[in-house]
Image 1 (cartoon, rainbow, N blue to C red):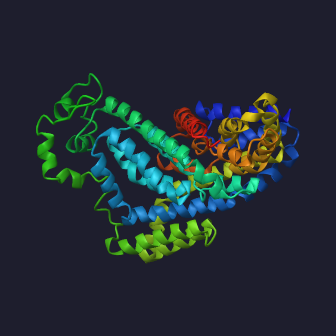
Image 2: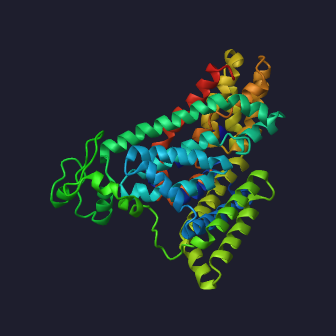
Image 3: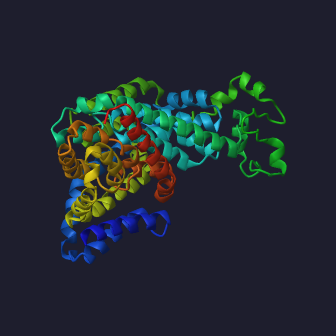
Amino acid sequence: MLTILGFAMIATFLVLIMTKKMSPIAALVLIPALFCVAVGQGARLGDYVIEGVGNLAPTAAMLMFAIVYFGVMIDVGLFDPVVRGILRFCKADPMRIVVGTAVLAAIVSLDGDGSTTFMITVSAMYPLYKRLKMSLVVMTGVAATANGVMNTLPWGGPTARAATALKLDASEIFVPMIPALAMGLLAVFVLAYVLGRRERKRLGMLTLDEALVRDAEPETVTVGAGGGGGGADRLRKSPAGGGAASTEETAGDRDADGADDEEFQGLDPNRPTLRPKLYWFNAGLTAALLTAMIMELMPIPVLFLLGAALALTVNFPHMPDQRARIAAHADNVLNVSGMVFAAAVFTGVLTGTGMVEHMADWVVGAVPDAMGPHMAVVTGLLSLPLTYFMSNDGFYFGVLPVLAEAGAAHGVSPLEIARASLAGQALHMSSPLVPAVYVLVGMANVEFGDHTRFTVKWAVLTSLVVLAAGVLFGIM
């Protein structure tokens, strides 16, 4: 019964948020509360929620102060050169912008923290997507999938959990997986290219002067197919594969003097919060913070708390300025932290009532004995739904040892099982149980249901590429 109710609770939640019948926060709180009563454990709902909140409180604190820290760094101009560098590569070509999103997310993911990756990626790319009227779910989908593949780094979490659960060395799990993960990352870049081509076909390939016209006069500019009117006289969409030219001035004339390249920076180059004289201090502080995270010198929430306090004090020494910066980022802080604590209700009920355990046992028990010699592949396939519907802790410490034991009975090495368990991470990063995904959709102003509906199919495809490459290369 608990197995059926567990799957029913998850399905109800996903249907309600994807159809936009409920907000994610409301669904994360009310649906598990209802099912907790349905299983006859309503009296213990408070205990489950408090336990869930306690488990996620450090994550919520980390996200709160990380948003403040990176918000301040964006305000003072730390990432402006990154935006300009991406712009020089992307220009106003939607295909290049989507590929640039994938590359940036993959590079920043080297720090092993999804929230940091999403904050930097969205901060850099959001202005470009908005100015060109590009699909924001393309940005969130590509960024989440790229980060999911890179999340398998030994310091990213899943690999360390697999190593701990099966008492293996993390390097023995990860190093042989590099070719398969490289194929997964290549699949993300190909996906970004395909989605970018679709955006280019929908919007046309604009030059910088046209993008600026669109941004300055959106009410008079018509870009859609068959559009007419005065706006069409000033802004003409080029064919999907060709160059674009203004009717008043050619693209080459405008690009030659570099004026537009300087103006079209995404982030306002004249905002009063810029601190150019403190650029190297802020860069050094950020580098030191990320280094301390990777080296695990302190808990991440403590590092971001100290970093946010130091960044505010040095860059904005006057109290009114500090209050203004905190207020400027209060919406993001409240949305994300609220979502995390709401997710604590969901995970608390799912775990506390025993639903997760019964679901995992049912899934493992449903594997036919004939599949025993292929338990690595089975583990890889199961990692997709299980890491999506469960936390990484629940999967790697609760389910993986059972799968490894079943595999060992048929001569399958625990190392192969551990490597296969990493295949589902591309999908895991869009799970409603991952706090970082709320940072992504919150900063990008994208509905979680829209992100889920768009991203899941591409993330599943990427995970299957990683699994197939692992089998092909004999890694598992």
